[in-house]
Image (cartoon, rainbow, N blue to C red; front, side, top):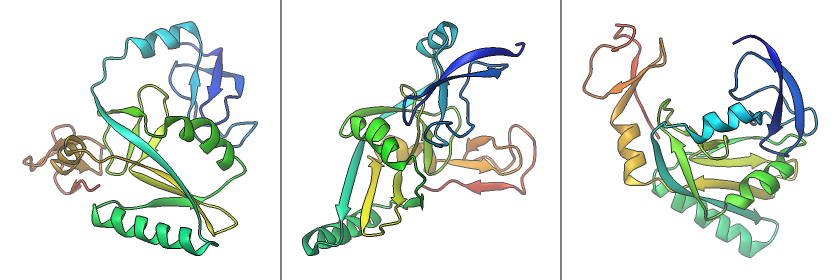
Length: 202
């Protein structure tokens, strides 16, 4: 495809902008409005049509948002119990420092999904993160932002269904070419290498 100017929309804050690209896929440069590195999806008619016709296999689960203020004793206890429970279920937290976009990201992209079904694409597997089909968001199994006020604990998690656990724990990842292969394979079916195969983990 030749390079052309297309319209994109930030999945974190909703900002729409033009960019020159040679594809209808996601745009990953930081948002000019909120500075988020969340995906910016193309809103040209052809791109919308392609997404509607996307036949990539998915797994359905639900997303849950949370927020605690640990300056209060009761919420601190609740948060500590929440963390203990999450770890007992095999979750590993992915956390990162907040940017100026974090509040908008939760308000506009995550909180509306609280308790809702999300569709995780399975064409390109990682242990702890997924591409969501409907929103184009990159979602983690358990994500928590690090605010300057470290007493605020905000994040979300996905319900790790048996299907999710089986597809991750039943595969290996080739760290040479990125291919995902069945756990029983001893040689990568794409690049033919064996030294770079690693068991996938949640």
